[in-house]
Image (cartoon, rainbow, N blue to C red; front, side):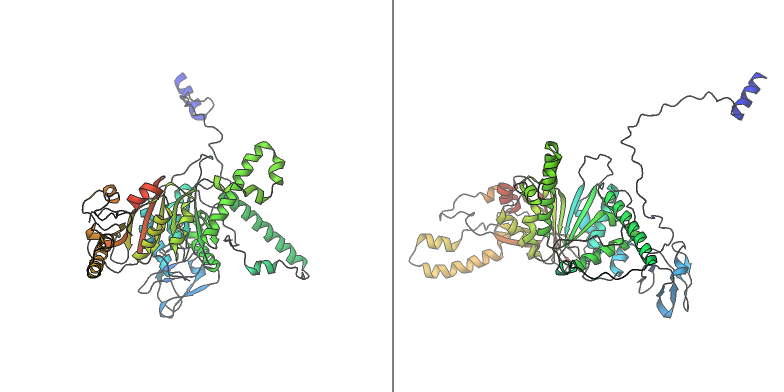
Length: 508
């Protein structure tokens, strides 16, 4: 009877059941970060207002952003009402007015890049995926506030295709972003004349009280959204800095990134418009000023506040530590920007240069060799249709193994120098054409580069190197471009750059 009463007490809850107590682990309060910002809707199983919908068929279509009361013209004279799409499940059969029904769904990243309006030719998804895989990016979420973020520079935003692929690759390091502000976040590195002229005083029109109240409410909401956006951006652990020379193109790319999957990747990217060298200089000034203010804050708060920007930057630019883990150059004359970008590239960081011609990759190598930059070439890959994983190319500077007949003739001073000089020029031409075959086959790179003086008294290092460009395997085919990959290695500006980067050995 006592056991029955005890069981009833346990069921009715009058007496707590003697269950073993499970010790709760002591978690420091700093590790539990409350959710501070409202996030965007990431439930992609339903169509929401603002989504762009993919209409399949022989000629696929991409609708404009869904709006209440809007419509999209489909094939065969049909029309799709946006009100019939908003709120429906993805891949539902949606009837069209004066036409067949369509099974709609959200576009993939490949379809989105190919079907969105463009101002410039994009890097299509097949090539963009390969470029991202060559960078070998790995990120993970981190709660350590002292850990610096992973930063990537993309110079040449263009259509925004590669920007989206890079943003997707680093998404795991950041949380879901809050709703982004309606105003553009593109930073103009070079002030336009219109901005200065717009600062001139203008007559303010008389305002309606009701309109003023509505405007103030909207301004307050916009300010709150901007503050939440800036606060969230300050705690990111992976950032893409993308720079385009044209503000119009940068604004278009920003709109494209915001329009894909409700802007899930928009928070990972910071857009800028202007020359990349201007961006590099601005970043150095901003970070050196921040470093200077941090140091002066220990001395006194008033001293750091009274210092002018010029005083904060002066003499401190050299103290800026490299902060880029990856850099991608996709722009005309990209080889001229390599010295600027190399100065802020971290140790063991990767530099990728996308060029339409393989000889332009040679221009990059010439700049690296001439400027003695601490960059070592890892590979050159050809992109294009029919090349699934890229075709490797052998692009390097090589010194001809054969003696220079012109140098021998000039050193000997023989009486028959005229006739021998003609023959020497023909042989020298053959040596330049087939320089790749005349380099020591199977020889060690360092041994070949530091060859002893020949019998004519002319060393190989005194000769001009020959640029060798040839496919690693098979014949050359017409592709979509070439990507050169370089890695920053400290101390590579002298010996490593002369031997490994010049790549005087031939294994082909």
